[in-house]
Image (cartoon, rainbow, N blue to C red; front, side, top):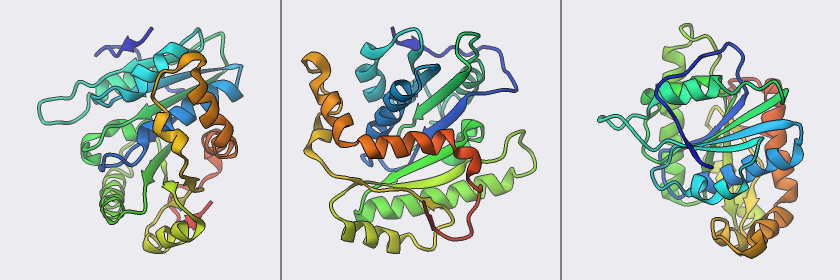
Length: 254
């Protein structure tokens, strides 16, 4: 059953491995990639608990994935923002740090962020190990990604010595790319950015049906079959996030 974040809750020094999919631009594939990450972690790590935190008012992720919930896979929805449009940081942070379980030693939290949230209003980002920033090859998406990265760097530099946790590693995810040539164009367009560049996820019509409920979940099976190598890389990126330097000087391809 889908749960809703409360405004109160305990905080702990030990938190789960946490990743957020974020970009100020909508339609770049945050929810699709969050689906791959969440279900990929739950499938690959049978001894771990996985929590998907859906912050999008459209609730695409939570509505689609709640049918997979069980004792170790949970879906949490919280689309309520403050009047100024900022996310409910307190409840998000409380939920991340309250994910403790005697039954499961490994714990993961996956955050699907909505479009339009400004980094300076998103203090929950400091509680993430990795921040994954999806983008496509369109000029609008590339422009928005550059601006978003600029604001992230400004935020992390301002609070560099004031946080308990170091800022998350920043990884740009080329999403639904048509060809290797297009990926190279995207890499060239972002070459001056101080961030990591992840593996490209190439386009497939199957991704159009990612959030469609089908009998026996054939659409999900098809997506996982086609994206198996990518999902393996994506989940490994989180589990091995401690190996990433936090701030590469230039664009560094993983």
